[in-house]
Image (tube, rainbow, N blue to C red; front, side):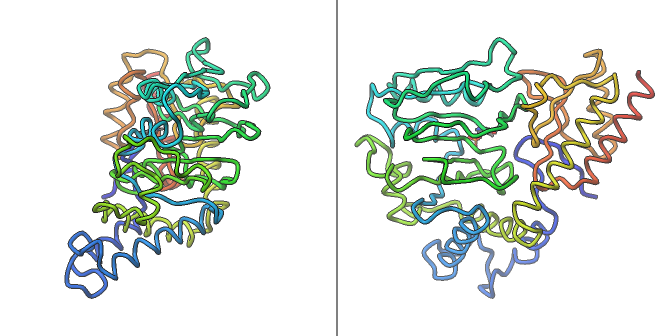
Length: 360
Ligand SMILES: *Cc1c(COP(=O)(O)O)cnc(C)c1O
């Protein structure tokens, strides 16, 4: 029996995708081997990687003047790689600080010797809000503005795209990419670790506008150097072949199930149902400002912290797994990424009502 897995990442994958991977595991495309065992330089695998990129461009609507890079080191490697590729030490950069992932990105920028201006810091709300669009101004002299569209731990999501004029906008899309349509042309650079909405961990997708290539510091490791990786089709070294293959299957699944518009409708319906259940209960609560509530990660509390452990344990016994909140914040968190079916959300809502009945 497949669990409804509410993990924040690595996260649930579509059953249809796993079944296809399973059916091809011992003999991929008549090769007599799994895709993990073929050379990344072989015709068949190069075609598979090309197809993955073409599908990503199609599904996400990536304009021609953007390179698609498949890198390793997760999203976390980009906290340093972005400064190394786009700036010189001492350059000024701007950040919006909305939670733990933006904090890590800020740390990386400082580590790389940048002069970091935090234009907004949501500490006063306990990181349950996003800054209002008109509450900060981006100095045209900064190298870029970095923000985190969806803070995975806090369940806080921007309901707008920051306006930066000619300053490149850089965004960590790890926990929201492919969840809805996005206007890529608004961004200088988008990066995302794969293990939330794009497949297995070990792969980080970077979309970077052409004019931002070629500025890398000479000390940048070659496998993180955007221009070198672009020139080699992300195959300067051995890429994470299985993750690339699986991303291709996921993109095909997104396309066949109606693309990002249909995905957005399903995701919004799932999130609305769960927030309505929380708000309507008087037992559960969500601390996030209503305009900043994430469609992907829904944290919630029970009135007594002593009920958290039994909630998580009883839910797991009912096939609803990984509902404990992040170790740093406690409480509960339901991550409801693309692959979580509405049936899983309904099952969670029913379980929550039953748990409230016996503990309320
Ligand atoms: C998961 C996550 C990361 C970290 O990804 P890794 O692949 O583990 O490095 C970074 N940013 C956000 C917003 C995330 O959700």
